[in-house]
Structure formats: C-alpha cells, structure tokens
Image (cartoon, rainbow over all chains, first blue to last red; front, side):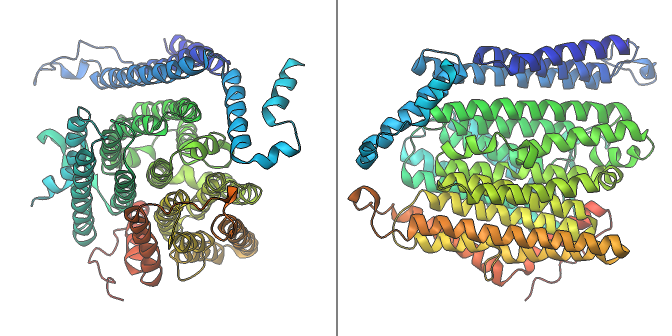
Length: 145
Length: 483
C-alpha cells in the first residue's frame, strides 16, 4: 500500500514538474495543480491507518480503532487552497492573453522588451543617434536561428 | 484586557476589516484611510502584546476551548512578536504611503489587510498546519499585490512569483505531513519533543525539505532566481511590503524550525554556513554590476538574507539573537530603501543615505548594531573550537566584512547616480513627491537612526527570541530597557 501511494505521488509530482517547465502558461498552471495534488495525496498517505469511520468516536466505545480524521481535514484544506490559487493563476494568464494574444512565455517577454525599448527611445532621443540593436531584436534573431 | 483577547486582536482586526473592504472601492480616499486606521489599531494591539510577552513570558491560548493537545494552539513568544511587530509596521507605513499617493486599484486595501492577517496569524501560531494555512493566506495576497497596477511585466512577475512560491508551499506541506506522520502531532512543542525518538533518516529529509521551502521564500543564493524579476517591476510600496514583511516568513520559518529540529540544524551547519556566505558574496557582486535602483536593491536583498542564514548557522544563543536582530533590521532597511527609491524632492536623498548607511553597517544607523551582532556570533562560535574554530572565525569575519564593504560601494553608487545628479535626465525638472509620503519615509529613516543610537530594546528582543529557540527560559523580568 505504501509503495502504491509513493509511486502515485511520484508519478503525479513528476508529470507536474514536466508541465511546469513548458513554455505554454496554461500547461504551467496545470502542472502546478498536479504538483499541489501530489501533496494532498502525500498527506492522505501520511495518515494511512485502518479503522472505523472517524465521525464520532464515542467515549467508552472503541475510539482507538477509528482511523485518523486529521489527515482528511488537512488534505481538504490543502485542496481548497489549491483551487483558489488556481483561479488566481488562471485570471493572471487570461490578463496576459488579452494583452498579448498569446500564451507562450517567450513571445510575451520579447513583446515586453520591444515595448520597453520603444519607451526608452521616446524618453531619450539621443539613443537614436547611434542605431544599435536592442535586446529584443537580438532575442528575436537568436530564436529564429 | 485578558491575554486571550490580546492574542486574537492583532490578526482578528485586519481579518474582519479585509472581508468588509473586499466589497468596497479602495480607490476612494476614505476607504484607504479607514483601512490604514484599522491596520494601525492592529499594530498598536500587536505592540501591546509584544510588551506583555516580553514582561510576563509567552502567552498561549487553545482555540475553541478544546483541551490542550486536541485544539489548535495559538502562542505568542518573543520570536513571533518580534517578527510580527516589524512586519505589520512595515505594511502600515506602505499602506499609508499608497493612500497618500492615491490608490489605483479597488482591491489594494483589502489585499494588504488580508496579508496582515495572514502574517500575524503565522507568527502567532503554535501549530504547524495552522502555520501553513496562514502562510498561504499571506502569500496569496502577495501574488495579487505583485500584479498591482496591472502593467504587463507586473502581471508576469506575479505569475512567476506565484508558481515558484506555490512550489515552495507544496514542499513545506509535504514536510508538515511527514512531521505529522513521524511524530503524530502538529503542535510545535510536542513535535520538537518527539522528534528525538524518531529515526534520524526521516528527520534529516524533513529538515532539508523545510530548509528548501523557506530559502525559496527568503530568496537565498541558489533559490533566488525569481526574486529580481518580482522586485524590479513592482510598485515601490508593493516591493517594500514583499521585501520588508513577506520575506520575514522565510527568516522566521528558518529560525522557528531550526528551534524545532536543532539536531538536524547542527548536522547541516556547514551547508548552512556555506550557502549563507555564498549568498552574501553573490548578492553584493550582482548589486555592484547593476545600475537600476530597484535591481540593485533586489540583489542586495539576496545578500542581506545571507547574513541571516550565516547567523543561524553559527547558532547558539548569540547566533540566534544575531539572526533575529538582523532580520528585523533588514526589514526596516529594505522598507525604507524601496519606498525612498520611488520619491523625489527635498530630504529624500538624506533618507536614502540613512538607509544606505544602515545596509552597509555604518554607525549611527541601526545596521551597525546588526552587523556587530553577526560579528559577535562569528567570534563566539570560533572561541571554543580550537584551530578549526579560529580558521572558521577568520573566514566568516572576512566574509561579513567584505560583504559590508561591497554593500557600501553599491549603495553609494546608486546614491550618486540617483540623488546627486545635477542635470535631471531629459532636461526637465522632476516634480517633488507629495509631502505626506516624504514625511513617512522620514519617520522610517528616523527610526533607523533612533534604534542605531539606542539599541537596547532591539538587543533585549533578540536575546529573548534566542532564549525561546535554545529552550532556556530567558530573563523574563524585562530589565535592560533603560539606557
């Protein structure tokens, strides 16, 4: 049983990490959800004991043989936190998608660099006198290779 | 007022207010002002609690009148209140700063209050899982704060921040579950007592997981990669809150769990010391090579965190108290510098210079006291160790000194570039910032100087906090308050 649980936790965590290192922001969010869920699975595994349903261990009854209710409460709390943070993350990437029309983190950072350069050129006209390639142009060139 | 109410008030007030303010429009002036008053009341009750704790020893309440051992324990001891007072203070100043600049978002006051509630709860809890919940409350609020003003790079920074910190939270959650599994308890003191009987293998794994989780929060050297991206784009008060209040979670967590897992900390001393030294040198070198103010401050935060880790690794009562003092002083410095960086006008340069002196550890600023404390810890650690101890002392004193000298260089480099430039860039004269914001920054700078000249309260706080960690009952009579 312990082996089954540790394998499950490992597989879920590993898939999550694989998704987090992708470029697509939506995949990153799904990855972090998987990682969080592997933690919930771990909590449940940490309190794995056999016993009766732990709703009301009556005093004097066989309360000792009830299974541990605390881990279930902990896992539930962790799940709630995960779901609310996921909502926040999704709203953040929606905000980025609206302004850039893309979910790819590299496209977004290149677009940002270009904007920053445009702003710099507007504020400091002396830069235009020696037309040098800015970091955004370099980045684009590098990626096209 | 009973101890019970005093313990619940600092977290309770901002929590209730935050729920109310979430429904109100924060851009209205009166909303921001009431929120600041609420946070101010919470701060005052926090200070009252701190005084009570320093005078009479820890205050403890079991939530919901459950018998001890069943219910969740709320405990205020010197370590917790030290961090709570400085964090709430920094947040209060930042909120006032933003109120006088004018809010740009309807959620800002509510989010700051939520974060205050989370932070206070976290510093005043005696239960590991409760710690995790409060920790999530405050970092979730921080994700929202990072995206404040909604520029694209700020939203992207918030996303990076959220992903990296969620990863840290998961690692901590796994460590908390493992602690529960091996000790059968979530109450910090019980866990500390029972950990001695568990197998050292599992304890050391847990200790490493906890160390990674909090180092990620604090932004120590190998875990710092997210920090510059987040601090550079942030609006000044947000950066001040993140660096002056939220980063305290990392240092508090390292100290608190260092007290719970003392054997594992002793085992990992060398790793901790090396990482701390690497952090100091790396942060200082990176800061020198940067030109943007917020970028320099971001890398400087990495270096300053290294001092806290170094003091923690040196250990013992002197080392722990140095770590606490350094963490408190670092919060003040960072809040002051990040807030000043966004301002222009008379006296702003002077306030920045005070902060810069404090980071470099030059008297009369309070940073001097903190640096001296770490120096003392290095000397004390080497005193009983023979040749190896002497060599270690020399190495650490050198690292501390070099770090200090380098921070002097980078702080005054940006001082020169930003505040001494005669010709304003672009030919136009910059408008001075509102008087209220400059006054706030002045108050912070004055605090830095006052504690530098009259360090007794800080030293007492550090000693009491260290006594909590080493388990020896500290001198609770509260003497030494008079100069």
